[in-house]
Length: 465
Image (cartoon, rainbow, N blue to C red; front, side, top):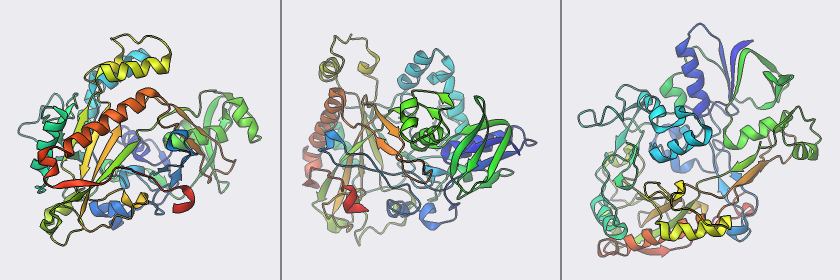
């Protein structure tokens, strides 16, 4: 029996297990993870290995239910299926978000600990900031487990693209987008350290933690309304004397809860699961920051401007993801407010928090590679002739759900993000796409890039399975 049982060895689960053990080395902590420990796998360690992880056994290769606003198509979703979760497989971008987001959360739950100021000590504690000389010590930490870098490599298109974004978006330069205000054209901050990944379990350390990998949770063991342990799919039962912490992620956590009889009665009844705890919100309000990608063909590909080119030779280029700039923008009130009023069917006051000009509704991320092209039917070669411009919807208002597909804990749940259900989301994305295209169509942008294809059509489920 453990004192603390953490279900889910992803980013959050590893941090929780590590900090519990660090706080009190005498306690026993058991961490259960569905995937393997691949911390030493070169694909996990090296930045360019990241592009080979989609659709591999190291990720949950999820597909959504048919999405009405994607013309009925099913959309690919990924997640880390290894110890340390998605921190072992993602692009390792280090982004804190805006103070307004946290302050709104604090207001909604009436608890100032969730405000930006309330969380700032933990932000500082998590990082070793890259700029020891000029970094603001009130905003950043300099002795935490995660080491950051920002625009650390001299990619040849950096100055040109930043100039294009300045012209196309009218946004200022923001030297520190992780200082509470992300708005502007900013250096791309990442957490590759000396060209190596820092997965959560490795960076924080799991010394003394009992780690069980390749183990699937079938259900949480309850004593009345109190969690006492968990049963694994192989029949093994693990108990905890103090706490059971469910940290299986936004998709798997509601699945585990419902398999345990915790959730809405009607959903549980569909699968013959006895309701143990009535919790009607389990599986609801799911939302996801979807990205729309554009691919631009480079006019001077022979100069080695994008990954895959024979002239992409500088060894420093391989020390991180091929990116150096991120652009965060707010959607103007005159665009967003009418759309929100369509959604709500009533007047939206000017002071609505979603309308604040300091909210980061849109993020634009240029990458010097055709990074997401394998997920499309565009047949774009990885040969250094194309770059990608991703436009992300950071503050979606559309809400979907996670539901059970079956009682099999290994089966993927039914994932319905309900993408672009709201007029506000559609208005925000249109604005972001216009900013992106306007930037690349400036004189500076057009001097090196031309549109390859402005549709990002994800493969349907039958095409990629």
